[in-house]
Length: 87
Image (cartoon, rainbow, N blue to C red; front, side):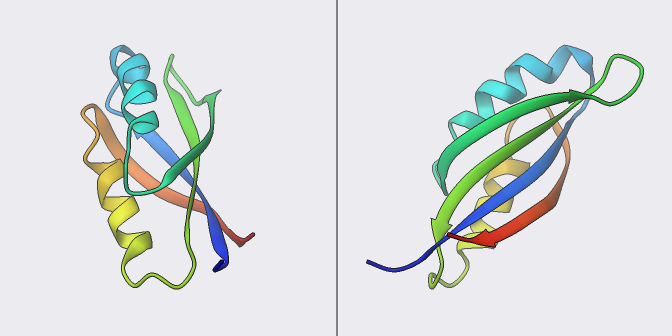
C-alpha cells in the first residue's frame, strides 16, 4: 500500500449565507477522502472553513485535482492550502 498525504485547505465562502452550503459541499468532494471540517470565525460574521482530505502520495495531479474540486463547490470564494503532511 502506498503512502498518503493529508491536505488541509482554508476555504473562504462568498458570504455568511453560503457557509452552511459550502460546509456540505466540501464534504461531498470526491477527488480526495474527506477527513475533517472545522469552521472558525473570521470577521463581520464570516467564517473560514478548514477542511482536511487524504490523497495518494504518488498520484500525479491528485493535489491539483483536489484543489480544483474544492474551488468548484458552489459558494466558495477562495481556497488556500494551509498544510500538507505525509501520513
